Length: 296
Image (cartoon, rainbow, N blue to C red; front, top):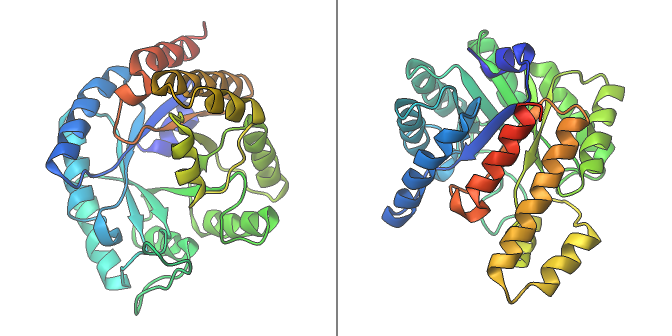
C-alpha cells in the first residue's frame, strides 16, 4: 500500500519517522539500535534521506532495504536534484522502483555546505516541481511526497511566494506534503489554511523535531526558518546547564504539540528523530503517541 493510500484510508492519525544513512561505524551502531527500538512504535511509514551527493542510490537504497527487511511496513526513500542529471535521476529511481519502493519523497535538496545558492548540474533540475513532473510522467503509479515550509523556505521572499512554489509541485503530481519542523502549532494551521485558500488540497502532514538543546535550535535555524516560542526559549535557557532537563523540556513540548495537532485535525505526525530514539526518551514519546492513536 502506498503512503497516500494509507493516509486516505486511515481511521486513526498516522505516525511516520525519518531516518538518514549513517556515515561512520559508530553512527551505524546508533542507527541500528534506534531502528530496533522504534519499530515497536509500528510507524505507518518511514522515510530515508539521501546519501552523499544527493544520490538516492547507494546508502539510501541500502538503508531502505535494511529497514524493509527489519519489518518496517512502508519505506519511502528521498530523491533530490543535488548533483544529479536527468540521466542520473532516471538510473537512481529505476533502482528504487526495481527494489520494490513505490513511494518517493521528491526534494530539490540544499545547496552544498558553505554555499547559499542552489546550482543544478548540467542537464539537472533547478526546482523540485521539475523533479516531481519527471517522476510522475515516468512512474504514473508512484506515490510522491514533497516538502512544505510552514514559516517559508529560507530562499523565498515571502510565505505567499513559497506557497506558489508548493502549488507548482502539487500541480506537477505530488500526492501529499510533509512539513519541515516548527515549534508553534499556529504556524502549521496557518500554513494549511493558506494551502487551501490557494487550492492546494492534498494532505499536509506536520513534521516535528523534539528539541534537546538551545544549540540544536540554533543549528536547525541555520537552514530552516522557524520561530521559537518565548516560553520554550526561557525554559531552555534556565536549564542550559542541565542537559537532561533540557531534553525533558523539549520532549514534553513536542508531546503538547502532537496532542494539539491531532486534536486540530492533522492527518498524522512525522518525526525527525535524527536516528536517535533514546535522545527523545522514546518510551515516553511512544506512550504519548499510542494514547493519541487509541483515542484516549
